[in-house]
Length: 282
Length: 357
Image (cartoon, rainbow over all chains, first blue to last red; front, side, top):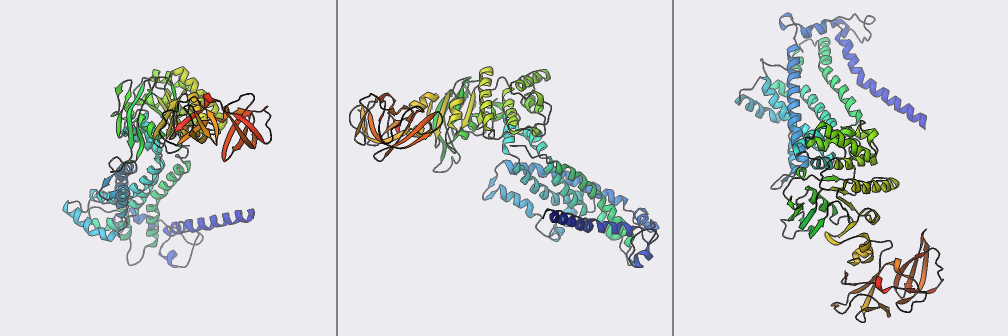
């Protein structure tokens, strides 16, 4: 029984690992292939099966004049927009979540839970519904095709995620911690900053991770709200496509674009496994 | 350190309702400086509400709170200089033991040297000295609770330390040690300690004054001895003591005696002003003994059960339909069947409408 369990455990771990890692390996080898190696039947191992070359990678940094796409600027645009919007969303979201978790709001029949749901409901609509209002809104304040405009829109999209995660998290942080801080002589702001917030770092990290992921992978709004001045990475990658699909440069760009998320995942995993909250009370 | 006056305090969680439900009915009380108080009562009787009102976490619907004759009703928690220890140890997880203990002083801008001195002195008292630099979250539950307590004690001028069932999560043998610790701390620092509990043993061994509460009402305040011997209401008699006080339906027969099951029992109470027929006679099982040579206040009972509870025996007997319990020493010989028990008149409490006469 025990042996069978261990066997099955490792079996499924291996299957899952292959399932997750295989596409990356596939993309990695493809990125070093040329037209013939891609179209000449299945090949796996460089130098043995096919002759690797760097054409696919070079296209990413070559200027358009020389037949490349130059993703460096869109890359940093994406990093800047995602990080700024995530940071602002986390700050605003955490403050609103704390208020929603600790204080009672009432406006007619609208209470705390309704307000929390209102935040989440922003994400229930299909994005296409929001595209026209966003477009008109940004054009009315002259922020179409600008980084600032994108940041504003991304804050609207990411803040609900932050609020949702942090409300749940603060609800799990015992109220007695705030009360103890008050009794120890903090004012409510100090209690929040010095006591509650340090205890909520795991929650902040999870919320931050989701904001970064959803911000980074967004194609739809980046596509609709920008034209020529500003481009974000997902839009640029799609622009790579042409009548002859350049699998090598698409694979290379896929790997480049997923790299920041992998780094984020590794950092987050380390923090989450520490389990900072366990033992706050009890 | 302060004298705490609660004057006409009452609290309702829905004061704007046409029929507000009171978690605390109006009461007044004074807590003298440096004493140990226990608030005792079953769950949901308003104990915690009372504590939260004193610490300022809850604002009473009516009444005033005075610390050393200064009105603090409208003062915020952080300005009241109160320490409160909750049922579960609350520690600041992200800080070390030292930082935890120093936190209240840091919030009040104490100097580094003063903080050091206070933290070390408190850590000494609580046996936390060797842990000062370890992360607080790594400690055991009882050590964490000591930290909670320590944060209350680092402030020399703290008005009172309020404890809300602080020993619930602690092992029984540690409980005993901590309770003794608390007493020593009280004697050493002369801090007013207020201790909420639903465990009468805890209250009896810890406090010199016990406040018994029931359904939002303060039913009796007094020393453990007073509560034990002269419970104000049948509730107190029932709630305090193990086994509970013997209570018998009875009818008055003269100015100082009542009849239970046609047996005349003389009491020391003045029964001339009784208004209702709802009369009960209460007597602690500790005071009922097997009759030797007394010739009054005797009841004839039928022994049902004798339990040997270590240092004493508990007799359960029937007198007609009434059950009567008596605690006797281990050495006492108990006849198998009928036996005469003596009820001492001076220990009898007579209750009219469940209130002591």
